[in-house]
Length: 436
Length: 127
Ligand SMILES: [Zn+2]
Image 1 (cartoon, rainbow over the protein chains, first blue to last red):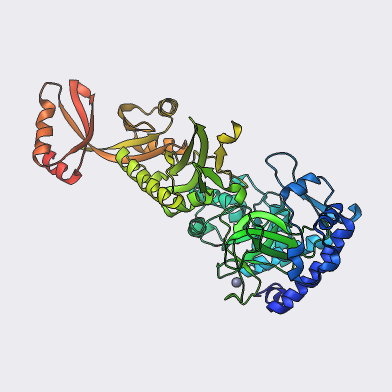
Image 2 (image 1 turned 120 degrees about the horizontal axis):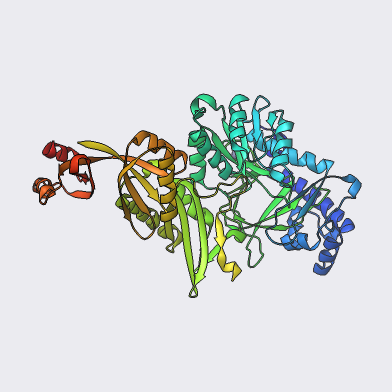
């Protein structure tokens, strides 16, 4: 099967816009009537539900952001009564209150539909054994991938995250063919398989498809994962505020992430002027949920930076494509006045076979100057008796980093395995400047 | 004669060195000689032990970054000028010494472990 839902994934542009317009009209009226927040915002902006007729009218509506969801914690953003809510999830806020998301049965169905479309686009079928190594629980990764894989009819292996030795044993013994987890955990799994004397990737591991998301990852990381695990690695995109993983996913072309725009309408705006940005130009990704009942969002600013491409993809889908997200504007570090994304550092490290791919950035401020330190692990086989050799590898990395970042970090070579591995979303940065 | 030496990368020098030494000690592996090369950030311990393979396996299992390299071992009488003979021979042939370290061997002899710039040439000259 090539498509999970050919009608929605391959719909012509005019039909899609008509469908989106109709759904927008409904969701705007629905939220206006049911949620005080939307009513107040629209009244303040002088927009009434009647002003929204086509999808183009979406620009009349006010934006919302993460802070709004926090301010209305816990239930202020719910649009459906509690007896229709069948599931909660919550995002891991690093500070303050989490964002709670609520789903009706129909929302869960749409969510699983989105994941099923992604899995089918990667080539997953009911004959696959899908190992879900995303964390199960409040995090949307585990249950989201689980429900989607179940919908496709896969044999689902719900290992959740952690307990890596057992993960590998079950992967080997049950013959998992699909692995769903964060890319950083996949890298750690690959490393652990390599160290496992009883397991040989080529002989014992049947994986063929990797479904990786929940954190930004680079082409270099894709290459490393594909080579180390002998798989094709695909991006799955989503966020708790909008639904969860499966808002969109790549196809076999690996040329952009198709967004299921009949369910989740994407816009790109200039984050400063808030004006729409034309296709192909980078800006901030904004989502409107077109069918959600439990906790819809309208023009939600994701902080993710990307651009959109329309038109029919080589895979046959017309669903709009989003470029790989290299960073959330929240992730952007300003170091000595220069904008740096951790993913830029990752892309450089991944290009060099000398390093394991693990890295850790520490920022601090000493005598009013930002310090920028990066720990990287030199692979065991590149160690030698010569300080000169190690310094030469370090100098090579330094030169590449300077040319990509525009500023010079202090690189430190550390022992392989000494940077803490993540079972879920990787933590790559410690910004001590925040504590001062 | 050539011998296998272990090189161990140490970032946190003091603590990790002690850890390494006790691991080897508990496994009854004797450290016959070692030298430390270091810069401001890390050091490399070059080490000759009684059982190279066992030591390498043990240290790697304990997450040490270990490589195994070959060095030349020269045994000579412990007296003035003994080493100079060898060093001159090598330098006359254009072989540089990347590093060397000395320790006492059996029967009051001095032993020098030496890493030449050109192992093949060095072998020809010393062998
Ligand atoms: Zn496509």
